[in-house]
Image 1: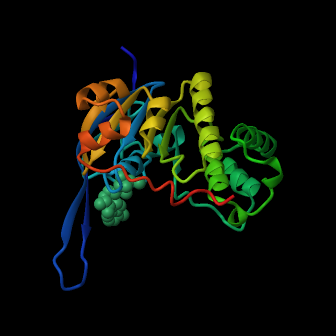
Image 2: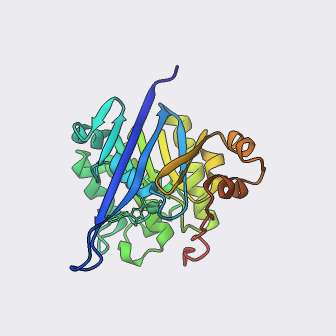
Length: 267
Ligand SMILES: Nc1ncnc2c1ncn2[C@@H]1O[C@H](COP(=O)(O)OP(=O)(O)O)[C@@H](O)[C@H]1O
Ligand SMILES: [Mg+2]
């Protein structure tokens, strides 16, 4: 048996909202009891339409949100009890990465590296190395973030998560909104990373083909529930169809929303 790196059991999260001061508070269960495990060195994809709970789950695992039920263990460390130690071993990339937009790519990356105790020379070298592998043009290293396309910012977000070479990577839609070339750069990079370091990866995506390419197993999330799980072929058998988008639609009962065509990188 391979070691378990991420163990999620009956995970629940509720958001309470009041649409106006006169209305009653309504509850919305973003996660309704999700359970799955990711083995050490495995890549696992969570797929689901918008609003299915993917980001909520990633945010709980990266200690940014507290769960309302169930348990989470990362490398044997339970959340929220061990959130400090979990932060040290988990790297997170999200589509809406926050940066200091007036600062350059280099300044943003060095800032993060210093917080992790890296020395300047070492951090700079590693940042450049990762960005080069991601196909990021080195001459843009000194430009402010606000002047960069979404694809470039996304590559910097990935470089930032990987500066410290964490054993566990949580990637929330790392390729959504990227043009085909950038998307390929990121995918190839993630494949190499796994070969070299056996990093455990939990990735969310809208793209079934990407999930099949990068991940051993896929979990389908719909309305806060994990509705199916397995290899891409398991899911094809289960759904009784070959085309992965059809598999998704049949198993989740929802349409796959492809936002990428709307948000293609402008560069
Ligand atoms: N901070 C929040 N406050 C209130 N509701 C939220 C918040 N974050 C997410 N939700 C709700 O939880 C559900 C799941 O959202 P999310 O996890 O972002 O889905 P996904 O990433 O799959 O698109 C959605 O219905 C969303 O409106
Ligand atoms: Mg999301």
